[in-house]
Amino acid sequence: MKIKKFYDVIVIGGGASGMFAAGCAAANGADTLLLERNNQLGKKLSITGKGRCNITNIGEINDFIDSYGKNGKFLYRSFTRFFNHDLIAFFNSYGVRTKVERGGRVFPVSDNSESIVNVLRKYLKTNKVTLGLDLRVKEIMIYGNKTGENKLEIYKIEGIKLSNRKEIIKTDKVILATGGLSYPRTGSTGDGYKMAEQLGHTIVSLKPALVPLETKEDFVKDLQGLALKNVTVTVFSNGRKIECDFGEMLFTHFGISGPIILKISGSVVEHLSKNEEVIVSINFKPALDKKKLSDRFLRERKEFGLKSVNNVMRNFLPRRLVPLFLKLANISGEKKFKQITHQERGKIIDLLTNFKLKITKPRPIDEAIITRGGISLNEINPYTMESKKVKGLYFCGEIIDIDGKTGGYNLQMAFSTAFLSAGSVDNS
Ligand SMILES: Cc1cc2nc3c(=O)[nH]c(=O)nc-3n(C[C@H](O)[C@H](O)[C@H](O)COP(=O)(O)OP(=O)(O)OC[C@H]3O[C@@H](n4cnc5c(N)ncnc54)[C@H](O)[C@@H]3O)c2cc1C
Image 1 (cartoon, rainbow, N blue to C red):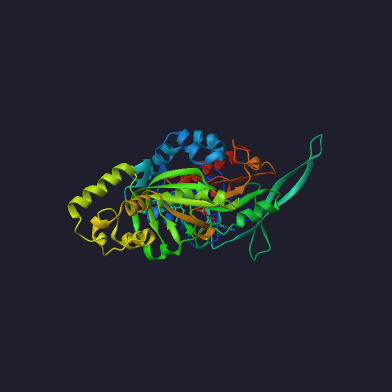
Image 2 (cartoon, rainbow, N blue to C red; image 1 turned 135 degrees about the vertical axis):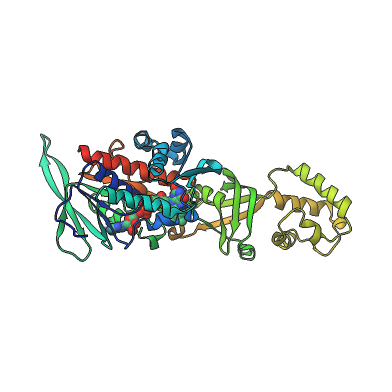
């Protein structure tokens, strides 16, 4: 598509937030250019929710605000303008039916993220957004202006420059939607942070969030691929209980991952960065207290006392965990179950309810679902998403200093901030 010399609005980044922002700006009547460095739109969106795309959650506004931690309040305005029911109605209006799953998660009935990406492509086409694929933006050009009685310096947008090109594509409004730093192969390599920093913005320290964790214990290697359901994990930092969650987890060659591990990873990363000792304790039998577990042990002993320990322990644990448990408890798997001493029973019950792993570090940010940190919220107007430093510059999506839990909160944030920014360019 031929690119002109001037646009009313230029949106940088063709991910979830950039596509929606460009479509909304154009639907409001702005001549809009969307620039994406990849040769396709929505590369990250395509892999969300394991390819099924958890677009949002049916929770109330306050549940949403809580799910982003202390920065969540910033999103009130975005959510009052465009919330989960609006997003669902938008996709429904393009023929995508949605369904609600465990925890209020909303998915397309197709279980295919491509149906979501396709709607956004259609939305751009219907509203005649000019698409510039394979075009990487290098710089946002501004000019300073001494105005007002206090001779305050206000910067305005002049246009943008692409990599390897000299000319400026002119505009006075830019929406910066380049995403975070995670999964860089999708195109999100943090370019937007550099562009914003060059314009005087503060970037709050960038860290991985919703990220797998590495453990000191290398025996996890032997458990690689073992998925556990209905376990509780509790995080302790310097011996103090920080967080507790219930659900599914997974052992990997480096440590632990899976839904509840991603959930707790944000606070684990925070405490590790303060050089605190972080221990994750797994309770494999959260439905039973120690007394009930002990009673069950005695029942099993009565019934299967003549069988080997190896054999009976499989009634308590997944088969792959048994040798490790017996090794850690220093018990021979060959002896008869009835020969287990009182002390050995105590050791096993301890391991079943308080299986400790020392966390050494998170996996690299490349492997994180989301980036924590980003453009400082102090420098963004929450009513418009406009920069307080540069007139005509707007932000939306993961680039800002907000990250949410799993469950559709991150995409809803991307769409809501996109809607607000696109609505604001029209009025400024
Ligand atoms: C594996 C995975 C699964 C996920 N699953 C879910 C889920 O199910 N539900 C949920 O709510 N969230 C999920 N997330 C998080 C969600 O994907 C992000 O919150 C969301 O994609 C952020 O959208 P964005 O538009 O801000 O950024 P992105 O989607 O990262 O888009 C940014 C775009 O900008 C482009 N770009 C970057 N720099 C430039 C440049 N200089 N010039 C031009 N273009 C540029 C990039 O190529 C990219 O296409 C998942 C994330 C991952 C990694």
